[in-house]
Structures are given as structure tokens and as C-alpha cells.
Image (tube, rainbow, N blue to C red; front, side):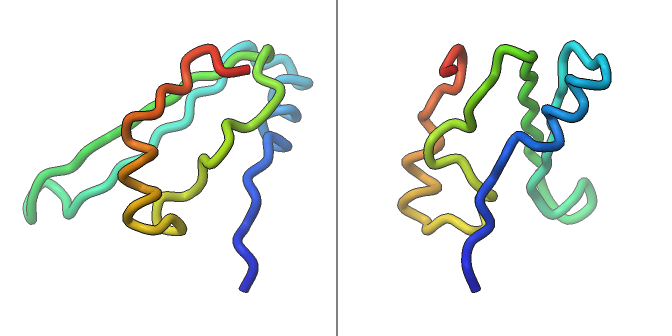
Length: 78
């Protein structure tokens, strides 16, 4: 099965509808009862025109690629 390719289609629709900032939030972990939970959030504005290289659902990445992505900063990478 081919890997899904991330796009900004939904974000473009939201910006076209008047949104000024979009925040994406995700969590990983077993839950408060079973163990720790880590949460991440990213905010983008309408100046974002491309998707950062190599960014994908972490479940679709190899362990090495996932580890390499940990240190990547996405700030101001238009």
C-alpha cells in the first residue's frame, strides 16, 4: 500500500474561509492510568506554503527516521 503524502489542502480551505492560525495537536502514550502521555502542538499561519520535508505520521516512519526527526525544528521553515 502506498504511503499517504501529507498536503496542506485542509489548511488552505480553512485559511480561505477566514482562519488566521491553525493549531494541530497530537498525543502519544498509554493514557494516564497505564503510563505517561506526551502531547505536541504546532501552529501555522497562512504564510505556510509547503509541507516540511520528511514530515509524516510517526507510525509510518522507520525507527531511525523517527529518531532523526526528533531534533528537527520546523520554526520558520517556509
